[in-house]
Length: 113
Length: 110
Image 1: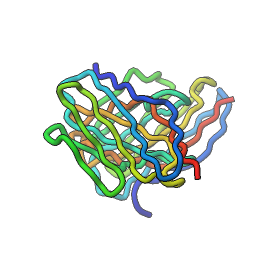
Image 2: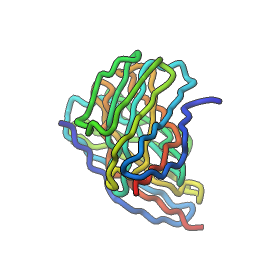
Image 3: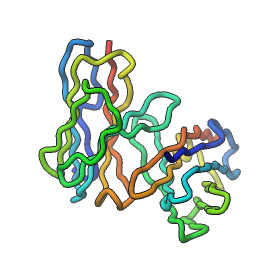
Image 4: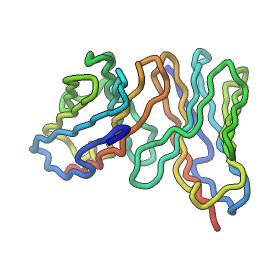
């Protein structure tokens, strides 16, 4: 595998479910990101990790819980979501948080019923 | 904070014509300006970028220009092809944090 991979690619969950999104980067990068992409809106930065330390949390509701066990893996744990949380969730990585160039995965299309 | 405006939101051109997408940004300290292409069912892919110490950069059929004084930058695609059809996003960055524009849906008609 090369680049940034995300699983699952599609997820449908009820508001009371707990699920997790997984991201893995094979680029040897030190920074990883979660973005939310909703229709007709710009990409919204949710979380930033640098060397497994969270460096930014953009006022994201606590029903989204990130985890970065090592510099290659990033998770987004989901619980008690709302229908308005339905969106494409994108993971990205970069050499470091200052580098600029970010490389994106294909995303997880999440639908909350 | 930084704000990025992108226009137009949709753009339709005939194959072979040129396409231009424009973005403006608000924070004069922004120093990195990437452009991403997102095809249906895929994540955004970096296609070209420019840093604030450069006014223009070209890569085959695509080019980006930057006017720091006016705080705007543009993507130019020449000799468009149907496979150029996608959503294009601009972004502005200071210290690595990317702020994205709203996106432009480009349709190239054969």
